[in-house]
Image: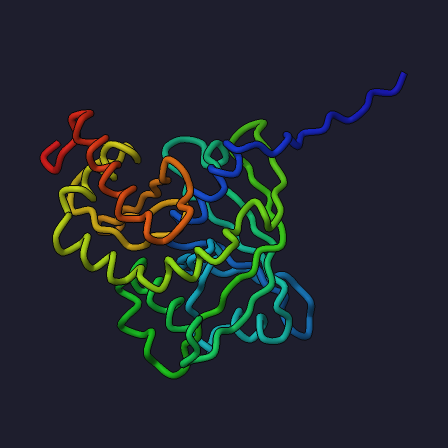
Length: 258
């Protein structure tokens, strides 16, 4: 009798999709693997990471870097994100995205949005983002492999990872004004989002991004992802959802001082 190999890939469910999106949206850096021109050998490097409004990863790289030349020669690449914590690093979740890189043209509307979102997430990059030899690449996910920990392997496709529909552009158009307003006048509410909904710790939390499914928050080098109770149906719903979530968190006893 021949033993059949056990299928280790689990069926992709809503929990796996949310974990995948959390890992991507929460990433500050990742390991980028490219194909070295001439040799075809794999070449990996660490890059700073942010996400576009629809969830696609964004990287800001120098044209002098070996991995940038590789992307221009062959856009196929993969990005690994997911930070290890205490103990066995292999016990912590991570996701590898198989992507095609696309360089965004300076001055184009999508470049302006991507640069704004990247710098909101990585403010120290302002020191070099404006230099002529730096470019933003958008990594278009085609599929992904999620390892949620021992015995928790999933395969995801683009539709599992990317937000689609008019709301993406509609919300992005007013995103910065909403961020500026919240960070100027409602830091107490942002603290509630971080402490209650993300179970984060510490203070100094600010909002770095809004999208149709949730918000990204940061406090120094710490980041967290907060999902809305339900995805927004229209951009105008953002304010109502933020108010309701602040009320919910405060009712549970969370505030700036806690």
